[in-house]
Amino acid sequence: MKTFTIPLPILGLLSGTRVIAGAGLALILADKLDRESRKAVGWTLLIIGLATTVPLVAFLFSTCEEKEKSEVVKVP
Image (cartoon, rainbow, N blue to C red; front, side):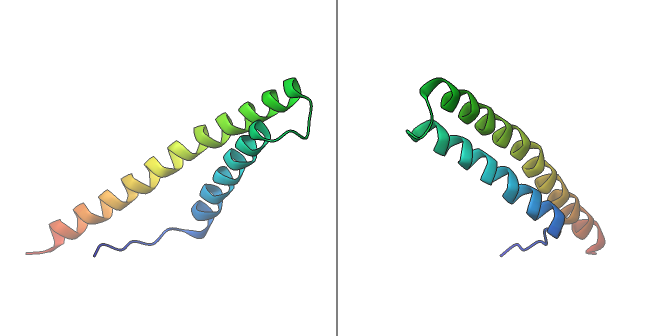
């Protein structure tokens, strides 16, 4: 089983972006605000949440791959 550590600041950023995306989706589906403002704010939050999650996940995968490559090189 492969394991790797995620730095706490990156984990916090990743969690925060998922919260923003979830809040946007909740606003899109809820009936608490008038339709136009709810959809505008909801879509904005959803897009920001998803757009900021993708680079963070890419960073995590690139960091994980670098560790695996360096471990493979060290093994005789």
